[in-house]
Every structure is written in structure tokens, then in C-alpha cells.
Length: 301
Image: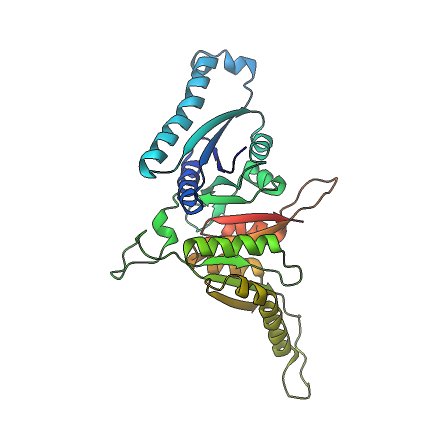
């Protein structure tokens, strides 16, 4: 299969927001978009119901992707949009359909009254199992949300992109995640904001020879580690402006707060070959539920 950006589409407002985001990303990457609609097997009693017969179900399953594709083509001229129907359990079907894709984009329901995501069971299962980067887009996401205000303080998609935000663990930095984040910042011609959160000890020790507390020494140590990790990447991507923040506190909380000023949040997910099933990881799980910008989860070994 040729390179593509795949979107899981079910007709909901969040999946339509995901399709719009995918079309914008497709322009940045010069890639086509493929809308994937999953048809779940219908129990015989439902399939035989007058209003939910097989013809009705087929009509709706074909109409949703067709109308969405037509809308994307009209709003994003130049983007090649196709549709595909697959059958099976949604999580299994989406993971399988996206095996050869560059990116899989899913919708995530916005939490009522509170900024952030409500990631459903299908989304969590796909994120936990997909080897392809998965982007979660909340319902209501607009192009203007990813850009700064214009000089008059009005939301605009014509202004520069907000920074890309990367959550980085300096103990086990992965090249796959770093490449993804730097490339996304380069495509958007924007800065990369790298946040490393670390948990301070439950107590503070004073009495070092220079009069500095152990806490201050830990701050310096983590900041230096972050600089060391990013140094070769600054040389590899000289056009990308990079800001570094090593903060004492919950990494998930720091990223959720910083996401308010980001166009995209990038986090990693370690691939675990476990007999007990796949896992997302506590920080990534929390970011998925509380970030206010689209979140890209990049799987890595």
C-alpha cells in the first residue's frame, strides 16, 4: 500500500474533526488521506428489524464516508481523499488497516466543561496496539486552535503555528519519537518545546560544600541531561527553534498544562511484547485524557 494518512471514521463529530485534521496534515506531508469505515457484524435479530435491515445499514455505512470525503475534497483542494470499508471489531480492524500507513488519526470526545479528551475503549485499544503513530483529535478541534492569534487578537489559521510540544524522558530517549517531533515542528515552521518532568525526592538535603541544596543540584542535573539529549538533534534540525524545560513535578501535569499553547503534543509509548496485553503507560494515558491539543502517540521499541 502506498504511503497515506488513515482516519477512523464513524460519523461522529469527533471523527469528523479527526478527518479535518488529517486533511490539513496531508497537505503538510503531501500525502493522500484514506477514510476507514468499520462495519461491525450485526446480530441477526437487528439485521432483520424493519428500520435496521441490511440495506439500511449498508446505506448509512456508505453514505457517511462518501459525504465526508466530498466535504474534505471541497475544503482541502489538492488533497487526494479515498474511502475504504472494512469489517470486524473496530480496534482490530483499524490496527490492521493502518499497518502500512504513515499515520492513523482518530477522534476523541471532548470532556464536557473541562478541556481535554475522553478516550473511549476503541481509541485506547488502538493506541495500545498500533505500531503506527496514532493522533487523537478532540471533538470541536479547529485549524485556528493550532495557530496564534492575529494582531487584533482574533483566532486565525493564517498566523504561524503554535509550538509543537514534546514530552521527553531523558532516561530513555527514543530516536523514533524525537524524529517525529522535530519533523512535525519543521513541517509547521514552528518551534519545538521540549518538557521533561521529574519527581523530586520527598525531602530536601542541605549542607553541600557550596551551600546549595540537593534539590537545586537535582534541578541542574536534569537540565543538563535534557540539554545533552537534545544537542545532536539541534545540529540535525538547525532551522527548528528548540526550548528546553526540565521541571520538578508530574510529567503528565506539566504536559497537560503546556498543551494549552501547543499545536500538537507528542508523547512516546514503549512497545511491550507482553502475554498480558498491550499497555499505554501512565504518563501517556494521562496526557491523552487531559491535553487540550491533538496528541500524537509514537510507538517505539
